[in-house]
Length: 238
Ligand SMILES: Nc1ncnc2c1ncn2[C@@H]1O[C@H](COP(=O)(O)OP(=O)(O)OP(=O)(O)O)[C@@H](O)[C@H]1O
Image 1 (cartoon, rainbow, N blue to C red):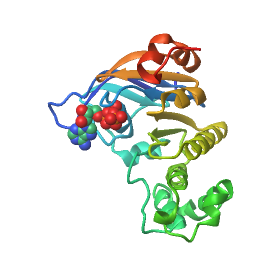
Image 2 (cartoon, helix red, strand yellow):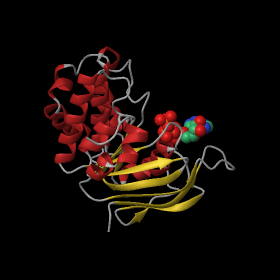
Image 3 (cartoon, protein in one colour):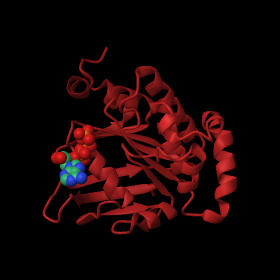
Image 4 (cartoon, rainbow, N blue to C red):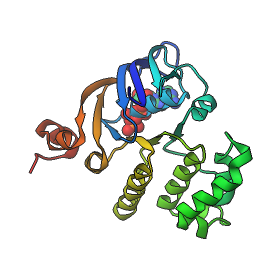
């Protein structure tokens, strides 16, 4: 069985609102899955529904055998799922270390030792641990946001447009960091505008259009598909 299995998820921002019109998504243990699609397709909404920020009105979401749909975010985090939203994902007026403390809310007894391990793991955060998060570069802030999420030792990390607003070089570094986190055994499902780069580091991809699944499959096959390239990548396969 997959690590995460979402089936027929219907969700929106009000009771009558169906932004997601029955979406399916699977993530296997240790995989990177990229979710791409046009603006307004419902990609961020899908991550919010999985993380428990939005309650699906229909459908099921199962994490490692446990149904999580309808549970509050904190409980879902305890079950091994962490979510990094696109914006406001760090506390600008707190130091790097204090931000990591906030990430340790699920298991306060082990926060200090977990922070030490995270700082060892991300030397740039160790170097800046006493600085306020707002003084970090955009890429460093995204790394801090992911590090906060890793404080709960998740099996699955959801990332909403991690490269948004970054320079090409900073985005490249961030994707390398995502691959490195994944290599340590954390499965990743991420929404990205940068479809080609997102597919290049993923095992599999999903394309959402207007709140529904459009195409899915191996990331390399999707990236080479002429119709995908035409719509999302701005050109034909080489
Ligand atoms: N907080 C909100 N309240 C009400 N409607 C929202 C909210 N957030 C998003 N929506 C609406 O839900 C729809 C899907 O938005 P969503 O952000 O999930 O799309 P997306 O595929 O992630 O696209 P984008 O790349 O533009 O973020 C859009 O019509 C959007 O206007």
